[in-house]
Figure (cartoon, rainbow, N blue to C red):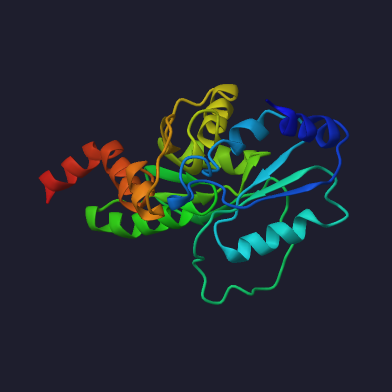
Length: 242
C-alpha cells in the first residue's frame, strides 16, 4: 500500500540524498479525472524529515527551482511540483538563477489582509487583487515558493502586519500548505484570522481546469470572494462613507 512512499522515506530521506522529484501534473489535472489529480503530495511529503517542497508560480520560477535543485550545494531531497496546462509567460526562456532554499518573495504590499500563495495559484491571486481594487481593497501578496521549509522571516512579517490571511494552494486543504501556516501560527502564538483555499477533502471528478478551479473555490473569483467576505466590515464602512 505504501511501498513507493517507503522508497522515498527509506532510500532517500533517511539518507539525506539529493534526489530531485519533479512532480508533473501536481494539483488538479482537468479531464484526466480523479485518478490523476495530484492533490496529496504536499501533505504526505511535508511530514517526512529532510524533504524540501517547492512550487513555482510561473515558468521563470520553475527554471530557477530546477537549477537550484541540481546545484552541488543542495544536499537534501528536493520536490518541485508544477501543474498540467498552459504557462503564463510568453517569454519564458529566462536566465536561470539560484533561489535560496526556504525563501519566498513579497510580490505586493497591501493593507489589512494578505494572500499567501504556493505555486501557480499565485497567478489567480494576482488577478483577484486587480479586481479587488474596484471594492477599495488592497491585499498584500506573498509567493511563498516553499511549503517546507517555510520562510519564517516572511511569515513573521506577514502575520505581524496583516490581521487577516488567505492561503491558496493547488493541493488538499487537509494537511497541506495552509495547514503548515496554521502550525507556524500556533507555534508562535499568532491569532490572525485565516481562510484556507485549495482542493477540498473530497474526490474531485472530471472537468476542465477552469471548471474545477471554480468548483473547488480557489480560482481568481473565489479568492476575491474570500477576501471580500473577510473584509466585509470595511467594505460596509466605505459604502456608508461614500
